[in-house]
Length: 266
Image 1 (cartoon, rainbow, N blue to C red):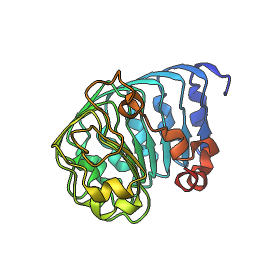
Image 2 (cartoon, rainbow, N blue to C red; image 1 turned 135 degrees about the horizontal axis):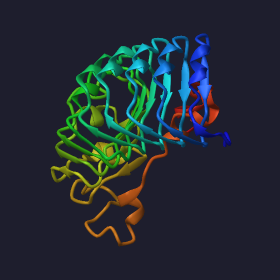
Image 3 (tube, rainbow, N blue to C red; image 1 turned 180 degrees about the horizontal axis):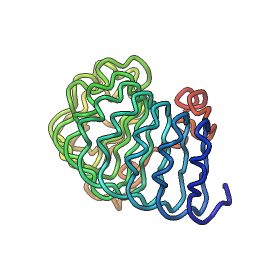
Image 4 (cartoon, rainbow, N blue to C red; image 1 turned 30 degrees about the horizontal axis):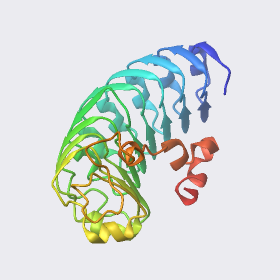
């Protein structure tokens, strides 16, 4: 725990050569200062697990060197900003456990370096996720507990060659899964699709046999040995409501060295 409380000090913007800013597990309140846009050398921004509120200041779109933005477990709100597409070096984005609403901006398709995304548990994120389809470096996409809808884009993860972690649980997705999940089943370490509106039998035998951590409704996965039925109060409650810990998955316990601690040890 950082032990810090009060508002985020705006004087930090007087250090434009700052490379890392990490103040997590504290009691910081108020908004993220607009002046943070002056930290143009910043590589790692971590304000996770505080009580920050308000919208994301547009000035953060000037952080052209940033590779990781970790703002999960706050009280941030508003729509996801289209200026996020300016952060072309961004590799990790954590906006989970906040109060964001609206659709994914199409500009997010420009984040070609992005590897890990967590938007779990927000107020009302909704609509399609087509903006993520072109992100060829994406390894983990965690969307649990929102109102996303439409089908899963056919090209999602189609060009990725490492481990895949995908959590679509507790949304309003429909249709089938892209062929990608069958083709890369042996490289998919985690797949969750429970509590959606997918077609019956959407999980095939290949996915059943090769994906080690698979969470799905019984109707979607007739081949599953364990699945989530309609009665979540039954003994299968853990399967129905299992929630992947992005902090551990992405290696954020190693702070700015997250890229050396993540997926390899999950």
